Length: 251
Picture 1: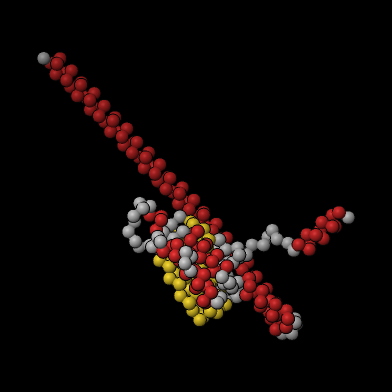
Picture 2: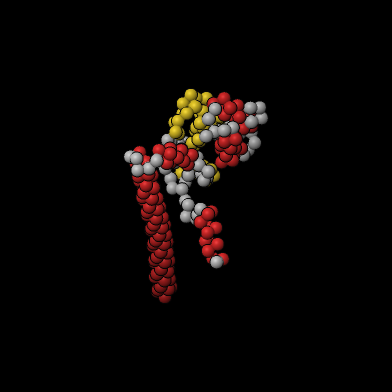
């Protein structure tokens, strides 16, 4: 009888140690898991901080280059206005600034406001009822074809180098992200621009089939602000200079 009690006591001790070992192992695993999560979170935070710092530095550099370019432009204008340059040069600088989109401009035209459809989804695909970058490009190209002399998108001046592309749920223009509603200003003959967009089977008609909201309004005076970004020209050289170098190399 005493031997049986002793065996039961030994089994109880063994079971207790086994349970204690299991709990210790579980606790150690939990500590390792929490440590791994904290390490991963810290690494992600460090990566995001580094990306932010790089973008901030790039932004500051581009801002500095823009300020320098605008300063040089003002110097040319001042020289022309003070008689150090010809009046023809000043006129040409102003004209080229307007064409390049580096000057605020105003004039008659149309305002186009586009918004996603609020209609009930009957196709099962929500993307059918949203405005896409291709829709916006179609509107901009129609305005250009109709003689628009200056165009802006949500306040961003549209140049020949401006991109209009999808970036997830938003649209990117001149490196900036925009969500609907989208507002497009176009300076030109108001009637011609209006008719180009609203003609039968035109862009407004097509978008309207998906209940995309498009409102086109003629205006006597619209203000389109200048382009404030950087125009990259690092790979460009005057064609004459290239020819001279090639001729020099042949000699």
